[in-house]
Structure formats: C-alpha cells, structure tokens
Length: 313
Image 1: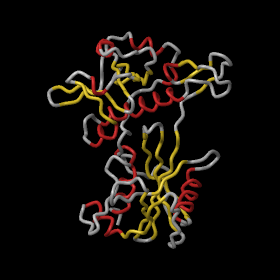
Image 2: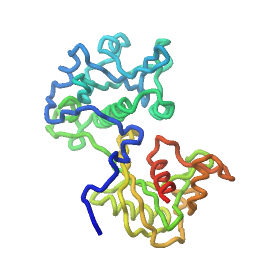
Image 3: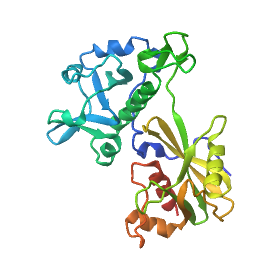
C-alpha cells in the first residue's frame, strides 16, 4: 500500500470549527514582563472586553465590532492594568481584559453577549472568534490562579499575561489547557451516540471525557468509551481539535472502531446511549427524524465528527 506521511485534506478539519480561526501572531518568544503595558501605549492597539463569560460588542450600521481602543475602554471605567497581550494581527497589538461591567448598565450601542450566542448568531468573524477563545481562556486562568499553589501567597502577572509569579516563594505558574477527548464510535454502518442528563430535549451527541495525567489521547478515547458505554475500541483515529473557552479546554475529536456492540451504559453519566444507523443520523441532520431527535449545533466539534462519518459513505 502506498503511504505518504502527510496524506490529508488540503484544509484541516479543525479549520471548520468554531473558535478555531485564530490568526494572531502570538510572538511567544518575544514576551517580556512589560509587553502588555507597552502594547497598550500603541495608538492602534485593540482590546477585547470580557465580562463574566460575555464579550462586549459595539453595534453600528447593522454590524458588531468586538474591539475597543484604550480610550474607549477607559471611558467605560475598565481597569486595563491586567490586560493580557494575545499577540499581533496585521502588526496591530491585540489584548484582552477582564471588564468589571454590568451588562444591564451599558450604553445603548453596546451589548455584552455570551460566547455561544456570539458564535451561533454569527456576530463576529472566525478570526474574532479565535481571538475570543484565546483571550477568554487566558483571563479565566488568571482569575483562578491569583494565589500560589505551592505556598498560598499572592501571584502577579508576568510575560504579558502568559505567566504568574509568586510574590513570596518565586514559583512560576503558566497557563493551562484542559485536554478533552471527544469520540465517535463506529461499527459498520452504525455510530454510537449518547444523551447527557443536561442535554436539550431530543439531542444526542458523541461521548467525551477529560484526558487524565500520563494518558495518551488514544488511551483516553478507549477508556472513556468503555467506562461510559461498555464498548471496547480497536483502532482510534484523530480527526480535528477545537479550542473551547469554557473555561480553557481543547476538544480533541477522534473516531473509534468498536470491537463489540452490546452497550452497558453508565447511567450516572448518561440518560441514554444507543446505536444509530447512517440513515437515521442523516434524518437528524435534516430535521426529519420521526422522534424529533437532533445532533449538536454546528459550532460544536461533535456536529462535525458525526457529519464527517454520516457523509463518508
């Protein structure tokens, strides 16, 4: 069999996912402790204002602008002292700042909208969504790491937002990303889908779970599938990944080859879990399923995993 190391679609599957369109040059090798402060002094610097899981948008002429100048941010009494530097887009500094704003008290032309709604409503472009995912994850990490995990004393932001240093013992802490395996198990012309207890009515999705320390992606896919459904997997194949700013996860999408079909669901995790044939899944996408069953919305990686399999025949 002829094999090429880089046999793959010209455009990676990850490019089609929400929050994955980040084009910012992070310039990680150039971050200094004062890089964010220096960037704020640049006349063209653009700021994302993130307030309690919502992004502040300025609406004008029927479009939404996610970026603010330093002057505009200060006019809203936003404290920019702990702004984080995301990097540069077209040589322009892009920063994110936690804005202590009351969403109900904003001027008429401004609205604070949750991340999911911004994506599902198409309010900003893919590059803006990517910047949002980066900024929201960084700010959430800073909010959760104000104190040193070694000695318990206060930490301070360094490296433009990509490090915190303890003011007492000097320990350095770096932003984290929580890896999550999300997998579509397939057997012949069927795929395995489950329902979490918190899901919207009629929705089924791929199974998922956090990757644990010392575990490969493939091992996590096999373990989670067996724990949640009692299905053992053979081959595991990577498909795509998606930054998921809730608060700072990376969804790693894979396909798994089922070795058995007798389901033993974990009822503490799942309300239901069963096999769906390809015809039924296509009905779910089309909105014509006789029981009104549905697939997750387009912004979710599960949607793309399931669609890639359903349309692969």
